[in-house]
Length: 490
Image (cartoon, rainbow, N blue to C red):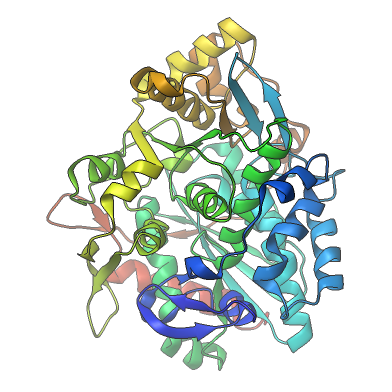
């Protein structure tokens, strides 16, 4: 039987993989999710067979049951081979310390781990759109690397226009240029607000079928490539399998340490664990936006105003994928919305608590201070001659804290996800170690290219907690500009 996906806010909804990809967001502003009992299972023998297979072969093996029969196996093999062409993108596992490896996920076209999911998503979406002879507008909110990765993956695709919202003052120039220099079918918007405002803007557009019908004559014109998209989530379950396949372990457990913002990598790794990967415990490091570790500790979820951090892609105070995690562990989280406007009134309401004890057994989470970002980069460089980016430093520091607090696991090997190329953050690296890292060739080229930037200048609202929230003026401005830009091009 093919896997059917349901909405975290409407368990009675059941859709195919194709419907989930094309819809983007599930009904009632929910996220598409798979029942644990429907996940494929991989045995110890299966894991042995994965050794030395290419990344594209692993992706095909792990993800086929999620997409079949909507994508025939022969075509899906071709999609995986194109998405993970080793001449363009390839992960690397490097042993650094006695029992700590670094999984470099920054060797793709935009030097970010998000290339892995974006390239998969783009090719899957393009297959469905070509099959159906329709076009879509892909809506994306980014806190840093997502926008560039998705834009690169969708650039020049005939059946797709890509609208990217990014916080105007909270991403690096290098990250911005990866979106704004592409042009053609890529429309990058600088938003007067933080990432959570951008994310809410994307969510609201995805749910606004009235606007879609009125302007584009198709209520399903919008879809998502954010980590709220199933097409972004599922491929993030592949690289923990890849790391394990290169560690020469025979059923023994390991500990992935994941720098976490919107929780896509974390959620993908949890799914991998549920599929049989021997994860002893998952370490979830966050920056000074510490809502999740406080929730695990106290059992109270309280979104707060986001604060700046060197790990800019992780400046997230209310991770979207947390709703999926809560759902997987038997709970329910939703955002309270105005019935007429769809505006979020209160974010992150848990009306059914998940199994907190099970969550605590499976996940360890801690917050890394801004200063610890820099000191960790310096420590790893001085000891091992390896330069980590600010996000990777969170993963490294988090697992070292875990080992200190759990000495019984000190011999269990750990894998730190290194999610971005240090050369994307030259100022931060120079601040930490006194030298500027080598700038990737693609980023050097973009430095000399013209940008095309659209802006949402209207200010955000501020709620009673002092947190930025999407304003009506911002939403109306975004709709008007999208209509003007895209109506004639689709």
